[in-house]
Length: 433
Image (cartoon, rainbow, N blue to C red; front, side, top):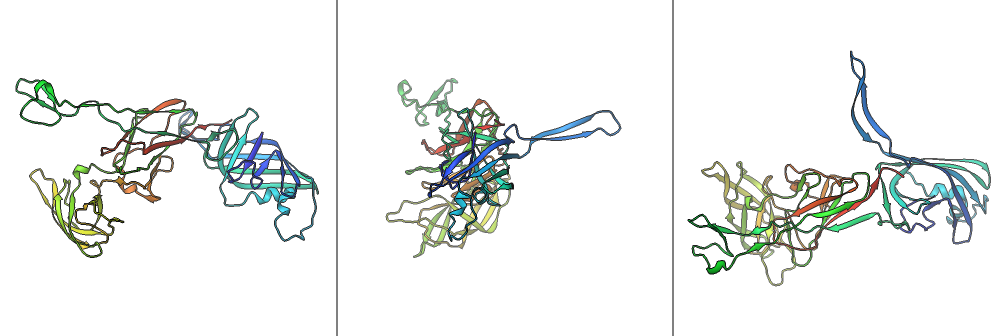
């Protein structure tokens, strides 16, 4: 077995700590760090919620969870060139004195990759912090060492046999879900239903114009690990595609996670006039929206839901806020009847459509060049590194990939885009070796 601790991608890079193998440095000096024992590669410790019944025989167990994994590596170090000459001013001695070689590559407060190469030809990955080092000095040229690595993630992840960082990650494209069947239909007086390209009062001869919507599909993600894993979803549109309100549904777990709210519920305001710097001078209500309460307010942030096509345009507008006034309708629902600018912003164009950022009716759009990452393990959603947790649809659940099975995942979005812009990423996790 060989273990490599360090963040340098190439597992043979001597700037990593390479255990159970000779390390030949630039000055041709050999250092040996041999492994004699490794603890903590079995199943991570169980954390049991137990207790005894009060006033009755027996006890109970309320929960069982995995604790963090602790890996303890014991071994022997051997110097082919051992000495105490520190007259050099560079760090060369760190590479050919085994004690310094080991210690210098295990810094405190630093998370490091741990790659475990088994004799069976498999390589497993994890990350951890060095929490203890012991090295008894029994002879100037050799001695024993013990390294303790604390790994917050209880799983071990399998990757390529050569130990290249990143090889433990897998990815698949999620195709957009489409309903199957006729796109639209009209029922005649006789009760017969016909489908049409467009609704009309006159039925086309021979049912011409029928539109059959080809069905979408779920994407089966074959998860080979035996430890359930929370995946990542990455949305990166290209070309002219704009992804609106992305959502993901696990058929396997029957859980849904979405971002944004139905676009049809949100108010839309059109930029009617702008100043020389693209600052908004006037807005007009295109759609007052439908809301369950009176959201009249001052200084509401406006976000573009559609940009006007203008020759020579190099940037999009930002910074606009508005004062909104809502009125109720006969169904006791509220719509915005008037809007006025509070902060004009810059770089807007006449024809831009803006939507107020109101909880319960805010759409999320990902434009070409932007990247949305939903991390189910970290419970985060970021757009170009900035949190968009505000957009998480109420009722959303973080879901995982079930072990040793094909997990069926469906991707939805409130747009007409059909592309390869959406990926799912995961690592095959194992309880132990």
